[in-house]
Image (cartoon, rainbow, N blue to C red; front, side):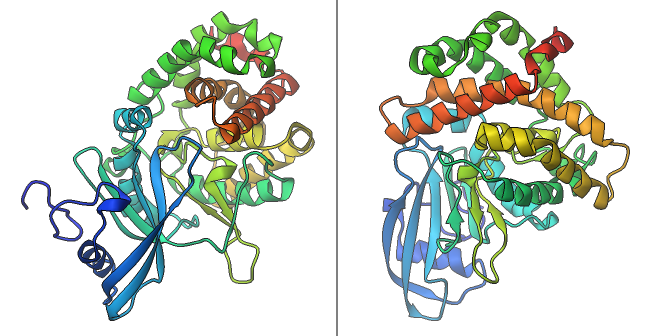
Length: 372
């Protein structure tokens, strides 16, 4: 194959951005998925502006001169914001997502979008075409996750985690990082150290004093917390399991929940996904009232799927430790967020408030001594 040729279409080069799409390329990409349609024209509608994403998303409405194919597809391309693109390339986010859809999605019963085409040439010549699921209800990170939505997600996470439980030390999973030690853990640790003061400068009123007071202890404990997340039992995790990456089906025949955005996949403790959703996407009152039952629901799903040797009490203690460790994600996102973006500020202030409340309610700071 010639350098720069797409493995999936046989066409030279992938479109780097929506404006580079052509009818010829779209025809080749969709025919590689089994459609016989010949695209005659198309229209593009950009999606998701204003949150500082690692990708550009658009809806592509398709017209055919012959044959048939989907009327609308979602296109996903590399970020155009220089800072976001640099992060995506550093952590190899685009290749991780392409390989997930190609190799891992067929191995899980978790509900994900149907992908018609996924390819990356080099590090950033990246494109995915997937089914349009606009008729689903998108999760709203600002509004927060309801207990009913969270329960559905616990079932779905058990479906993801159980088949790979203690089975990720194989070549199939070599495309993504073990949580630590890895480029992922080193980068996240350094970004937390570098970003703490920036987080306080922008969001200080939302960060309680009891967290600001343990800055030095927390930063020093990060490497051991990361190593703990990589200790057995580990599995395959989504890595960014929050409400904005979820679609909920309310109509007959729809899946209960669909999980999007697989760029952050890791080999880590499954409780990482659980704690991320419950502590940072649920409002504190709902989370405090329901979290023990929700963690137990996830654990029961694991057991029902055949996982052994992992007690319910261990899952709960792991949950508390994971909530503590995930303050790293709060700090990194808060320090990198564009403070001029109103929705981004609401998103981040809510995440900080929820995570801090969980750390307080669960007495997580008392666990710092485990990592010192």
